[in-house]
Image (cartoon, rainbow, N blue to C red; front, side, top):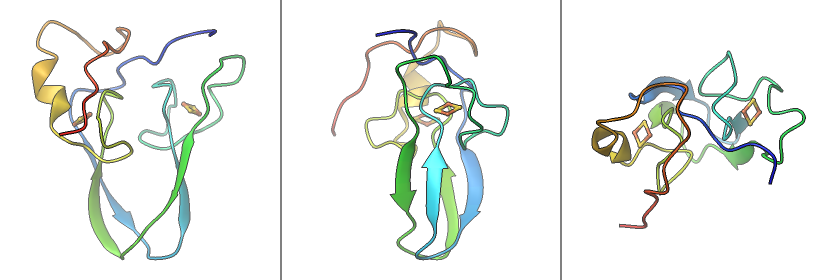
Length: 96
Ligand code: FES
Ligand code: FES
């Protein structure tokens, strides 16, 4: 695999989603348009995660890239104490 995801921020992004609309969540952590993909993953073996919003309204999308429920924040960012934006994402993913 070329490249690993990096932490974009240690807080989720609150965004307004529109029911039925497709979004592309940045999985690599390099987009300048967080939490969404801006094509910066080019050259990496990392693709954005596409999803269709199930309802209209606010949502908290993960920017630490370690969520076990990506693209949504699951609170994993609170366990990244020793890490900073730009650091590789540790393997903390879980499904609880
Ligand atoms: Fe990160 Fe596209 S810029 S997945
Ligand atoms: Fe909360 Fe990633 S920002 S789990």
